[in-house]
Length: 460
Ligand SMILES: *[C@@H]1O[C@H](CO)[C@@H](O)[C@H](O)[C@H]1NC(C)=O
Ligand SMILES: *[C@@H]1O[C@H](CO)[C@@H](O)[C@H](O)[C@H]1NC(C)=O
Ligand SMILES: *[C@@H]1O[C@H](CO)[C@@H](O)[C@H](O)[C@H]1NC(C)=O
Ligand SMILES: *[C@@H]1O[C@H](CO)[C@@H](O)[C@H](O)[C@H]1NC(C)=O
Ligand SMILES: *[C@@H]1O[C@H](CO)[C@@H](O)[C@H](O)[C@H]1NC(C)=O
Image (cartoon, rainbow, N blue to C red; front, top):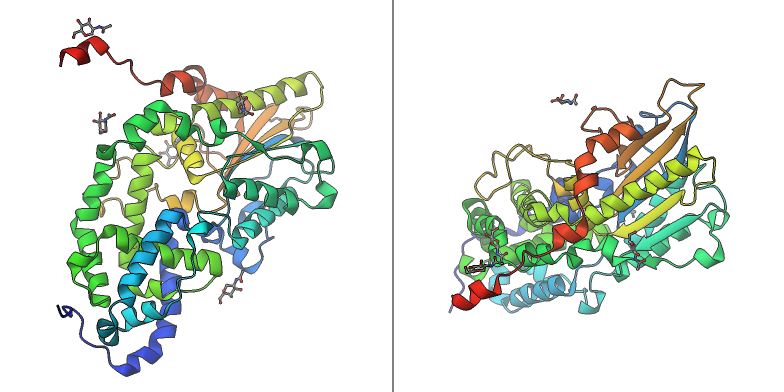
């Protein structure tokens, strides 16, 4: 059957303009890549100088009489390759375009994509890309520059990671970024694997049953895929590729958009896949990505954030311990705790703490109303995203500040505490604000599945 042509043939002259258009396209799209965003998207000054501490550096300094006691960083791994599933879907989409030489002649976009070399191999399966190594090395160097006293030679560093290869590699890259002068005792070279902390979502039976393995849990995401906004994007992409719109679906369009983001993050190039999308399309696809994050990792279901209680409790236990040690004039046993996990590790923790919460839930039918939403995962958890807790001890003779102060930095920018709208809080006030979570949120109870009444089921 002859392909149905939805687009008029483009005059040859327009092809010459294509490279220029592509560069412009990528510049416009890269802000909408969601969890596949480059770290530079949230810190543009790093494009010029990856070691620059940026404009926020001077902003929120504590008085000189406050010295950092402990730094805890929860990191997302650096830039990674697509997963096997994504690579397979991309291979299928690409193969389909290769099979249509006749259509390609009339469709420059399809011809460009057919000429594009499919270089991703399934074995790359979500591994850390060379760029991801650099993300981590530079991040380590910037953190060390920001907190020189904590990263001083021979300070004890605890480095823990999820068991995923990309996280272990990120941990190793972070450590190598600290350089020989900051190297650690040889018996602490190993990255310690701790999935109960860094992949708590896999271990939370209630989350797995209610959300992960529950098809209806993602109903808003699925409804948006079938909704009018996505329909428009699908029609445009189908027309650009000279494919009948019935031949593509939201998942294939998402793979094409993902590829545009991967090529930029991994290879720093604007791929022809980007030319399929306008900025308006990118906003729709960003929303689709955010919807999934919202319902699977964010405020959509309580269990998403409650499953991170184990990490939340662990953070405060170590802060408590450092406070106790400081009070009794002991050396701080864990001045530096670096933990490498996933976007799925950070997003629930931030939700548990109440950050980036919109007044209304993100839904399939409120795309327009959510234009200015806080919950934009590309701004929150790009590659190499990092949430840093810094505990300070302040000398009260020299300052009116309370003895123990805390700051939180997300992606190296100080966060405003909800209880004060300030970037610094006393440790006591912070604990008071999160009192309910500290007292009542415990992984075991939160994640237990409700007891099944076997008698009742038998009777059905
Ligand atoms: C992981 O961390 C938790 C909380 O700190 C701890 O209880 C557990 O023993 C650790 N597991 C491993 C394997 O180190
Ligand atoms: C699946 O999710 C839906 C929507 O939240 C919920 O009503 C239902 O109880 C869940 N099913 C299971 C088995 O948890
Ligand atoms: C990425 O590409 C841009 C534009 O071609 C260039 O200015 C920049 O230096 C490149 N960045 C890296 C890290 O190679
Ligand atoms: C923080 O600022 C926001 C916006 O200005 C305001 O709505 C909120 O009430 C403030 N919170 C506190 C604790 O001052
Ligand atoms: C289980 O279900 C049966 C029948 O509905 C009911 O009579 C019984 O009290 C339930 N048992 C428990 C422990 O909830």
